[in-house]
Image (cartoon, rainbow, N blue to C red):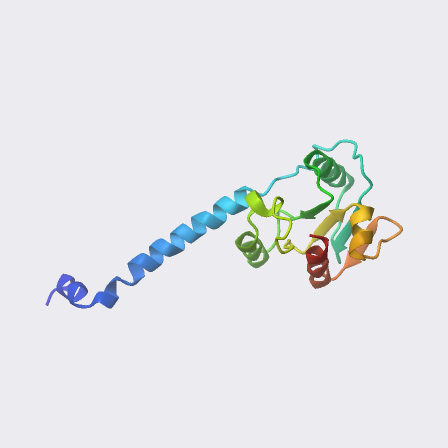
Length: 156
């Protein structure tokens, strides 16, 4: 019997084809979601209107140009809370993030679960106070990444 005869006689032989198509379509969907995340370039800063508190994962540093650009972006977009996703976020964390967050609808949906990269969050002191988050006197609060993710949920 030829291999074609085997494929026609055994319907299970076709399972890899739709599975591969499903996998490729899912990958393209996640890639589109990742491209919808706004990119803030460290040199595109400006004067921020609102004071900001930085919640950072332990060991992470954010330079002044990036801080300025992020604050200016948050002001322009009218955001009181902004989760930062570093360009070098590990693959598994980036995969989980784009799988859970659709940037197209996330900011409009006030009841969406807070999700983020677990690396850095910038928020206004007013929002932090309402959420019961401790504020550091120097403007930076260092946190464990898991605690930072939990705080993101409260802030959203």
